[in-house]
Image (tube, rainbow, N blue to C red; front, side, top):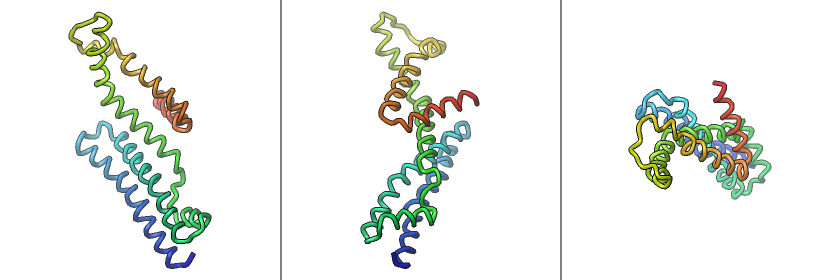
Length: 178
């Protein structure tokens, strides 16, 4: 690979891979703080990491494909990416963990209350229980709208995405000890 192409590839790599990923890691928490306050800052940060990782995981193969299209051998492309720091050190681990934790937080905060309301509208009338829910009813019917979908999603993840399921298990047990 000639020196000009190598320099251009590094600049293009940093502009298309690293800058957007770092921008997401910084801007998502700032936007979360501005909109919702500091209560869920850790989740804003993990959402930024997850978004940056997703961008990175899509853009890196495109960058490698661009260089391969210029006539560079795949081994040279991989060596250049590692040599210049364009490949994240823990490329799969942090992204999967951040994505899972962010998805769990979003589901717990937004999807759980919606599912509980659907529980009262759709399922309890089928069982012959038709009354207006009280604040205490959320705890009474917590299992069905919260834990049952978690088991279903956990099963599907373990069956089809084994690596992500491992991070989910580690994440869940890590949160239990915090």
